Image (cartoon, rainbow, N blue to C red; front, side):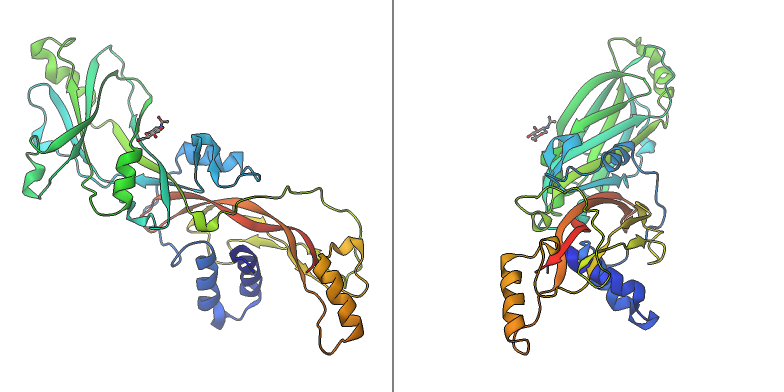
Length: 353
Ligand SMILES: *[C@@H]1O[C@H](CO)[C@@H](O)[C@H](O)[C@H]1NC(C)=O
């Protein structure tokens, strides 16, 4: 039995179980979802548009281990909140308007995951466009002590420098390499963002007035795409059209099972979907196996042997023969938003195995 079939089975048990058994069942369930415990978000923020978009697009069943929107391999997208302080004591001097220390906690990325994309988004809240041009500089600190936060001009590497005008628009930076280092959880010293009034377009004594415009206008967030190879299978079978043949009630078939996350007490951390049609398989696999029961060759043989020696050989089991993936959007313990593709979450067809 693979993890997701296990997931559905446990979920069904979980819904039927006594209250006393919930902790264990839930632990198993969370484990099937790649989680060590039930996440407890404290101050969750809004869901980034990019993640809603991927969620709404759904999964390409042919290739659930690729994030089409970003054109990279992956089955997990995380959006991290910035936890770095604003270094406001230093502003403004010279042409420097603003300096902010950015910190994103990527320690939630597991060792087995391969980070395939790291992207920083800098979003401007106001759009008082008056034609002022600013310089944006993004640095990677090389050494940093608590004291050194104030003066790190010697120990930093410039990653990006670009001019921009104040527009109601986001700037994106490809920080894949940096994210891969951070995910190793060794050397995450964050980033330093500086915004300067552009010397070419501002007259010397107008620095501060153009700086005022960008005051505390900024929202930064970081996004990673990663691939957990342990939940990716090499090839997929197509979801086939559902059979509309009526099945006698005691014969192996797909049964409808809607799982509402509220019933499991997960509504606080699962953002979407609210629930889903997981289904399950139930019924007998009698001799002789008919075409309708989609028995494997082995199952056909097994029923044959069972008809001869019923004490020694059991009948085959009614089990999923086709499954499809779903996406889940949820908050983790750090209030990050996570979108994850899970394979084999929905039972599409059952048969005798
Ligand atoms: C981002 O950077 C990585 C290397 O650091 C590169 O392989 C990748 O193609 C870049 N992605 C985009 C969209 O430019």
